[in-house]
Length: 489
Image (cartoon, rainbow, N blue to C red):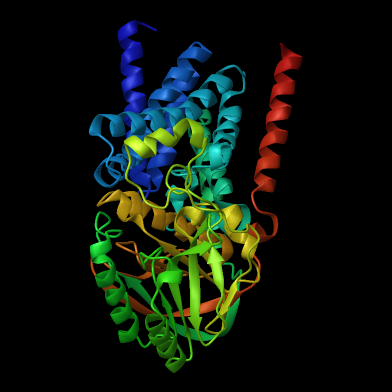
């Protein structure tokens, strides 16, 4: 390729990556990722070396992640207090690391003569690796772009979000492979669309008991004010008032809604909440920080009310946000550059059980724990209702809250359970088991979302087998393709 042509292709690949973000919330234009990834595969097919394919993949990844998760900068600079230049560098470094995944997919695919068969497999395998390497960051896996409106989202209860990703990139590959065989292409895509649509009509779960009333409290506490000692009393009073004003059977506060240790809450405060919950024959979930012994702090959801007091402790912590990896190496960042509270929390048990509250078996997850479908299903099929408590105020008025909500929509589809989300500034929503939002509060408003929600029981295939069928299929297929390549070389 001529130098100018190569530069143009890199720019085009970066623009394709940026455009792919339109497939995700809040835009939901789900055909776009199928088209943009098809264009990337076409670029890979036409380039002459694996190195060129890697550069194109890197450019795509930089456009994709710099556009899709720019909000990391907001958390580091606007609320973390990091200097703008360092926050910019840190954000770009993260996005550059994530961009290495599509770069590696391009390089490995080009080294195999069956590029259009290999690339979709490696793409999804790389998404899965992203979900656990360095504790995991599965944001913007392409399967989420189909949730909940695309027919392809119908595969989520069967194969999970990585199964949906595989079908998306398989469709992209088919567009390139059968570009001149239009009848085959149409038939293949139509088969995927029809199959997904039919799966959407399968009743994977059935109602459990009667619907219950819930109130999801959105306090809208400014992140830069939340942990100031002078505003603590005001925050406590606000959530107390919001809870006492609600007549719902289950009242849910956001993550760490009460900015004190649970042991520091006045006894009268807890008793007022308890008596109100008893009057409603229900329970209240408090977002608190627990202290155990002298050196263990937990990000927790604590129940008080008609049922015995129960607690869920967050187990999947955010690196650099809730714990300091390699503290001896990176501790100086917090000492000199960042002002983030609760950076040294302890992990809760990974095998916690659903809480028996308000007549339902409630599986709780806190903040971005619900972006890990394989972890959410640990509490299923026992759980009848999923509750997410979060605080996305760290990311300001950005795409982050809606992208996070879309992942909760995927969890609803994978488990055939309703999901209710109580957040500090949004997105506070009620999500039906088909992934559609039934009710929502406007972002950055102070209010309570009241709704009737239905518990469900039953097991989807994904609850039963998780991600392993998809991952095993990918590994087996890659093994066959690479063995054929070696045989023919």
